[in-house]
Length: 226
Ligand code: OAD
Image (cartoon, rainbow, N blue to C red; front, side):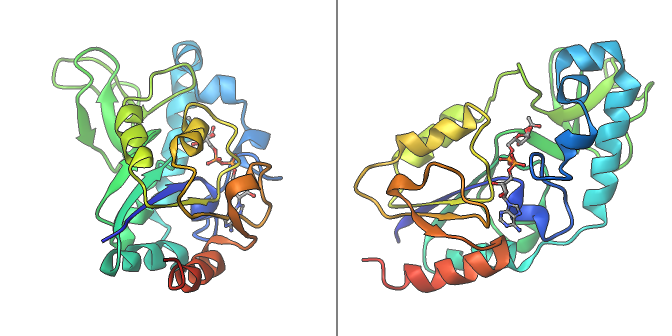
């Protein structure tokens, strides 16, 4: 089976009712990224940061995968599909995708603020005073700006080995994730799905639709890719 590698961003989950970051009305319009998504912000006002992610988690638990997520999971019938996502939701997994690499962490996990940073399943709010087994405050298992992206090396390997590459719903402005598109072979077919195309579309076949309609169209295009 051909290896289909798919890089997704916030637009993938927009139709599930999860806000993107940089569209008008997006999360970074109402929240200061330096306050809520950096280690310095957490140090300064941990409650504000925990509350921000508690809201995101509650919103996620009330959301469902959209048709785009479901159609991507169905591609596993015909391809070896690897999803690399910048999203911290679990909607790809809930739709049935079996290989999902989270570059920016996961909302339904918590981790200690002190080493060892062991992740634990966590579906409730994280409050001040919630501690790990060693007695240290818990925080969301999210990769904040200025922190390492531990999954990056594996993501790079997957991109280099892709036979077909697809980008869905990301503005491609956050690094190192955005750099992954440059690691794929020049020879392979590449597709990008976004109703508001980012500027990088040179080597890509553009599908200018939202995720659900776009993935349906992608599935048709893939049938004629040799
Ligand atoms: P952005 O909010 O930057 O970009 C969202 C993209 O989705 C844009 O290109 C939109 O045009 C597109 N879009 C909007 N609606 C869509 C739909 N229905 N279907 C498909 N696409 C749609 O989000 P990301 O690129 O994912 O990181 O942002 C990258 C990172 O920046 C996030 O992981 C997050 C953020 O700060 C951290 O918090 C560490």
